[in-house]
Length: 273
Ligand code: SAM
Image (cartoon, rainbow, N blue to C red; front, top):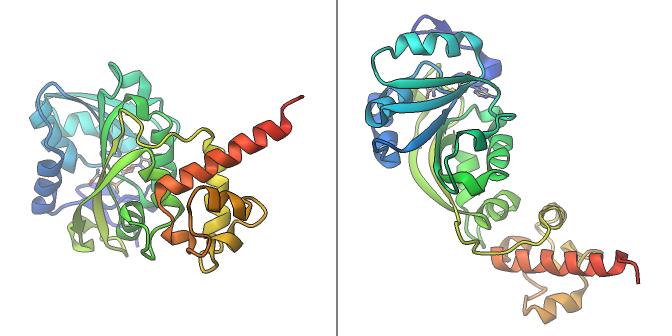
């Protein structure tokens, strides 16, 4: 059922669940710790629950909102609160580099529409050289996978793909009652800080993606069997990785090392002699 919130008919296709719990809003703002002069963009400001607080602390704020009605109404709602720069645009296509003032200069925050949260994360990671940090509200199950450690059931492709590029930190749990209309699932707030100096160097990300997809499709098998056909058993021995481990027990460092080995092998195989 569609619900009217603060005069606006919430649109399901845009993932519109608006934050209404003042304590949760204050908790997110405290964790984000905005300070005057910082360069911040909010994705999906909606009716402005976080935007109002952010503007108060920052004085100036960029927002990217897809819904034309909300984008048009927001400056009126937040008149006199500060300088709001509205980009009526799809965050999945938005070039965040245009807002940056240098390397790792842009802070990003958003209560993201759950149906497109993973594509937005990966879109932002392609621009992570200009991003200082990202704080997002997401479906709790997704955040559990993002922060998962090796050896746990939640550890998988998403954990490795994010953790090799960013420090990932769970901030807070948010129940459905904090929103209007309430979503069907629990939510959580997570912070990602892209490494300014890479912690792991991945030479070919597509190889890492392919390797992880192959391995985690067979997460019950041993590593040796899960990656058979891609990674010969002797590479595992050479890298000192136990072939009897399950894919979910392999560390981020070891996944990156295996992907690099695969990339080197394939480039020497295909390079002209
Ligand atoms: N920030 C508000 C809050 O916390 O109450 C709204 C959050 S609501 C979960 C998600 C917001 O993202 C909505 O305002 C929706 O219109 C907007 N949105 C949905 N898809 C988007 C996209 N592709 N690009 C930018 N904004 C989008």
